[in-house]
Image (tube, rainbow over all chains, first blue to last red; front, side, top):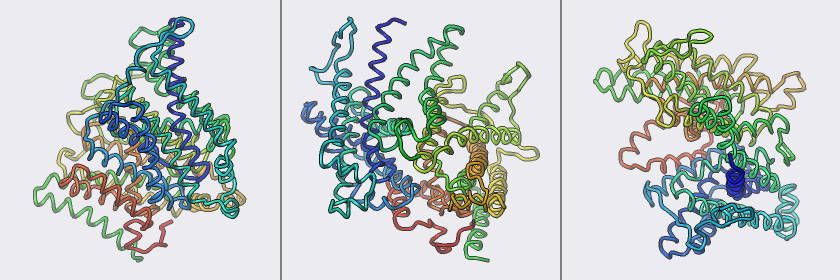
Length: 306
Length: 327
């Protein structure tokens, strides 16, 4: 394997990791602040992607499509928070799992009802299409590079939001003692809706970005959601930093595993056997990573409570 | 008899009489529906041991359901192609015999549940949910990439596997097999709940700290419960694959895990017959709603949401009162 291919795959892994971060950040915030496990977070990815595809088809503007994905998913998030999720904060995890599973059914079938079963396509705008040449002569798609940059900027923004702003202080206070901040006069239910909508907006953005690489279809969110769970288990619940590190670890492991493992098995197997063993193992690599973290540090790399 | 016991008797009788009526009326499709209820109910009885009795919210039981299915698919496909599974270090051949397939399915899914449980039970609560879901997904992707056994397309077998002395191709006879296995599993689950093990497990679920101070180690009990639970769900998987004469990665998907859990909730968590009632309601809804709408999952979702938010005891809770739990 050449050095160029290696770097390209590393960047692909980073790009995938950044996508996962956008999903995992919302999940981990919602869990950290409200103690809620939200399976319907994947549906919000889908909502964002469909909103983007619709607006893009109507206006032809990619930037408007991105804005629609964030606004659409955040609005959907705020609505389900006020209608359903709010009633679940005091319930046990089983009720939360079931109610949000019910939400997935409603969202998925509802979307299928409105948009049909055929995938939609979201095109990469011309000014982001094509490759760029990176230092060292590496050709890399500009769109994917943009995703990496935007994702890292959002991560930085999120860190600032949590560490430096008033709302961030309230979020952190909500994580450690929700009765106390309610007693101090913070409108806790508005804060919860806000945090939920923030997470939903990030998921929607992830949906729009992924939608342009893959296709926009019903059920596109759940595979990402489950990987985001793996990220959170690795990074530790409630930790944005853990989510970022976990995302990049999972993204890079997944992408590099698909390349390196077959190459590794080719050293002592014939080509087709190496290919099938390697790719079968590669699909399992991130879960093996998760198992290792569980054995060594059950509460995750940056997690407090297990 | 309590109201729940009466209701349970009624359910087991209805599940037996309905296919017998269908057999008499020559409605083989109705028998198949009843068989489906019995098999999916069995999968739910398995999950109920972990979830209802042990309080372990596993969102990865499709893994065991699918492993059972693949145990059937792999053994039967080798038998129908006359190619041994392996020749070295000793010869293992495929089989079309249900009892052997069941034993293999039970053992294979128990081993998987032991491994997954040993790792997942190091954590609890929301971590446990996410980890079981993740391990389930791992097996799903593994099955997709495992091209030797059909990969994404799955495995078909031509003829249903055999059971000594019975004609399994006759729908009513296959139903009887599934029904008897379901009843055995329910009997086992009720005995388990009343045994010293079940009581200790229940104590560990309700107040882990108190259980620990009297010398109960929750981890060990929960691991045993999770393993038994996975094994029963695996057996159901083998039967389900046999019913369809087909196994595919869909059996391992997270939606399957969710649906098995939905049976429990529709019927009532921690109720002995909850999974059976839930599976029956699920299948009936699928048939009725599926007839006039392709999008029946929306209705299912709304119903589920309403039950979770407002009727927490499920259907048995509505019939038999809230507080009576079998454990």
